[in-house]
Length: 168
Image (cartoon, rainbow, N blue to C red; front, top):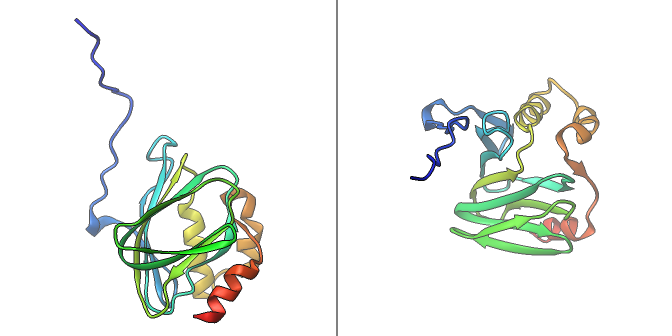
């Protein structure tokens, strides 16, 4: 007889829609917190990004320790991947490996509803809470810059992404 394959130390993470924390990091975007690395034993971090028409999305950045994944639940999402911009539609999926410059925003005139995940997980929820405090005027952009190592979020100027936004 074989051993029981059930991992009794791992616990499922169940997040009910009505109990998920939702943050506003701008006038046209919401972040719904689903599972941070402390709840998934470091396996992943996940959130839902709801980007309304005209949302600036996330500026050009990269991560050094995690792969970021985007699954479009609805709408249309522009994504910078290195030096190219692709448009994802409902049901499209992309992974962004560590150190690859990327950015994202809804396509012009569109909205985007996106499941975002990082693997391995990294503590990100306090980063999203910081973004909301900046939006509310309770923290400064300098606080976000100062947190880049802690949250593995490294911003930079991307001429490709700036041109894409200017054309929109």
